[in-house]
Length: 300
Image 1 (cartoon, rainbow, N blue to C red):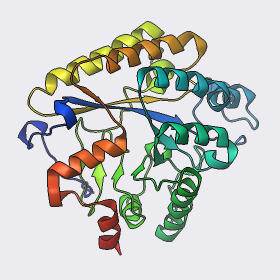
Image 2: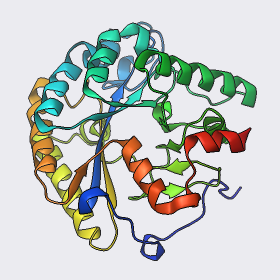
Image 3: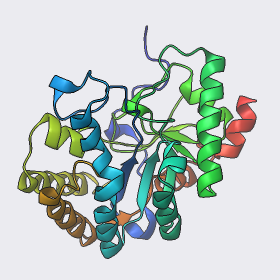
């Protein structure tokens, strides 16, 4: 079947985007904070044991993130004045409440990222998915005090019903469709796609492509420099997507810190959150981009 969710739109033919303060690139750090079931396979550093239950090798590698890695990351974010855009599994709220409290103190933006990173919606009926998404969104709102406005599916997965169901719940954008350097409207009233990156992503670079720390730093710098050059006539979005169990390993962490220093010190860069980027885009598009609340009304 042909794609019904969004039309083809070549970037040179679009109206220009401007960002607050005259910035040319809107940057956000997509921080994946995830919970994994101990008896299910998931993102792994070694496939040889990934199917075992339990799998101490891979589970322990992932579990380093909430226990150690994220606290190292927080120090860097604070130092460079970057607020995280959190892709949050709702089970994190009860399993790792100290992380939620740290984020609330810092004004992080909270996006729904499923119940855990061992569960996807594939195979759910519309009603099953509606109940699942409702539970996820309501749990995050109760824990953080903020209703999520954005969504990233575990492993960037959706069903054909997901965007419309998210709109019913009052969300306004999804990050799953990693096909652009600018936000754009979906063919679902009130819903946007906001850029996320599966390439500028620590799991892809370190695990899939075996980048070293210096190579990661060079890639981040090259990404920003190219987007800045592209943005001479219309603003761009740069997403740097990280998982604390990967990029915040001790031997890698300093390269992330140097990358954040480069980004924060670069001219023409707006240090934003994904929520702020979506809102700024909506403000420029007027009625073409409805608020999340009005989207929910349309869906009902």
